[in-house]
Image (tube, rainbow, N blue to C red; front, side, top):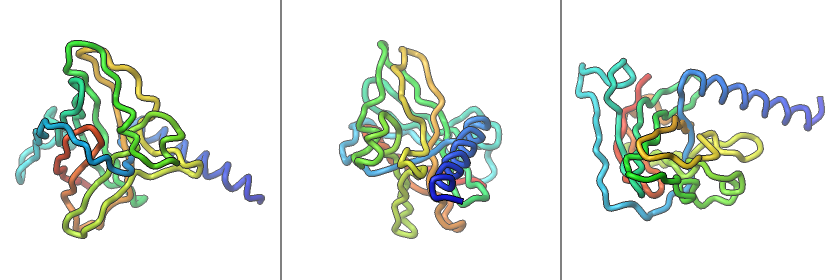
Length: 191
């Protein structure tokens, strides 16, 4: 089998994984951070103990992060999968009174990610317990495993989003989610 065939087969497997993830509403990746954060604070909703979380069927988000121009990222689930990945999914809402675009800064500042267009590739997870930062995963062509081609979002509308990261150790149950131009927030890992 040639290297070209192997790379093609890997791309096909990644595409299949992404398609399967989108079908069940999973979320994806993060990349380099932009230290500029909006003044708005994150409003975080976490289940305390036995209370239901979004992952258990509640309509309340795991976290809500405020960004620029009335955009709000609502994180609905943070799931580990058996392949060693952590998928963050939710929706990007426009709570403003006019159409808005997600800032190009959300792709981060890594050349490899930026060259593939608009994305949420700048997202990171910080595990304070292990003192590690997790960046968005990429496929064999360097494309971030996250929502890409971010459209203009009309006032009051929302779009589904996902990001995929390497999973922190199983003992880690909380990480801080960061996305350039949005406030950061602690999120609970399920699964």
